[in-house]
Image 1 (cartoon, rainbow, N blue to C red):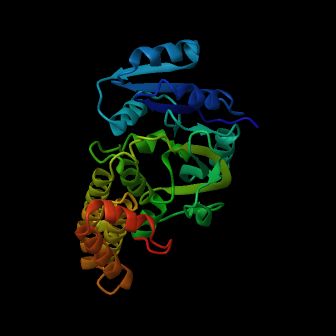
Image 2 (image 1 turned 135 degrees about the vertical axis):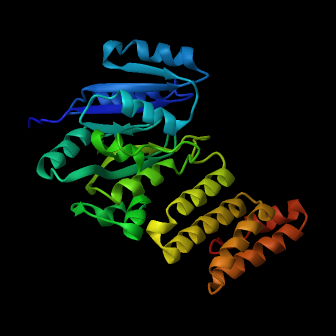
Image 3 (image 1 turned 90 degrees about the vertical axis):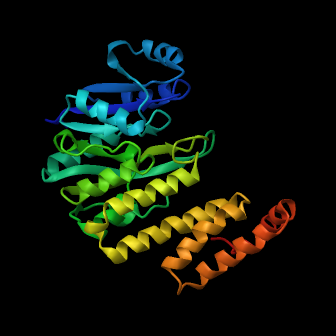
Length: 315
């Protein structure tokens, strides 16, 4: 099938020399080839190795260089430099199935009112098997989606940046916000989904590789603080009730992560914040009590008690 649109692929790169070949190779093996691949070198400390990794691709890949500004800044730079009608985002440690761009381009031809096209995806630990993501993306798949307010926010939490292809014209009006990482993507998707129609392909067309130290897995306190900041930015569009519900979800995750790491003292504060928002939930009371009790024990004993708790005793 011949398509009329042009596609740019934007890949931010920071400490990416080890994995970026896999990402680029997955783009070059697409059934539908993009018009350009832009790798944004975000002041990476492994710049020499990154340049060496890109050399073999010749003119097939364009490297853009900037001072380190974070993934939001790098993606924005790619959007500004891109020339395609559509932009597909891919991180340097992730990869696509060969039919991804062709499938999404076909949707763009059939539904010209759509400005965001996603897909379902796999999760994978390095060296492990691909496992379909458990997000509720499948519930939205296979139809044109027009959402606003809480519905748009819920959808924004069910899509992943590496799965999306977006009209460049809408990205030039709304950009990623720096210093919200790793919530910068949900922030932008919520803003766009409030305004434009979307479509989620039901096929599993991309893989999110959960590399240790990735931005969404390296600092749970920063992650949750910025997610809360993002929710506060959109309280007017969400409304009071949905905003508080989303905040409670963040505090629940925050406490659960610390308890899972055997850090009950760190879990106590977010557990209390969740209880303040949801005092009617027995689970919220239980987690506060569990955090407080474990925190009062000597650290070695607390860790032993946590590791021997029954599987249902989680946040």
